[in-house]
Amino acid sequence: MSTDTSTTPHQDTAGIRLDVERYLLLFRLIGCDTLTKIAAETGLTVRQVRRVRNGGVIGEVFMARSVAALRRNADKLAEYGHAEPTLDDLFTVTTTQSAV
Image (cartoon, rainbow, N blue to C red; front, side, top):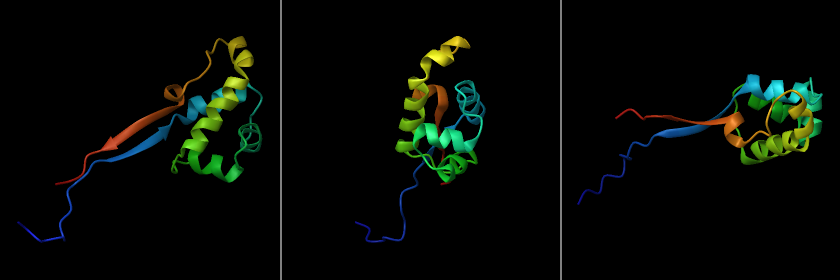
């Protein structure tokens, strides 16, 4: 049995990516045309919204609050022909294989 602890198994890395264009479009349709308005509608800070928009780490609170805010305004979205959004409509799980 090897006792070498300096090697670790290679693991794939995973992340979540925001569809920024769709996100901003849906929020514009409900009257949130600035990051400040998006933050107010979602209960997040402008810094959190800006960070995610620029490719930062996306947490479950950001995801949940964003979808909840859009669902609260489903009637406005329906006026423009958009269905009530789901997590899959706005977020994509990405994976990167580790080098061996």
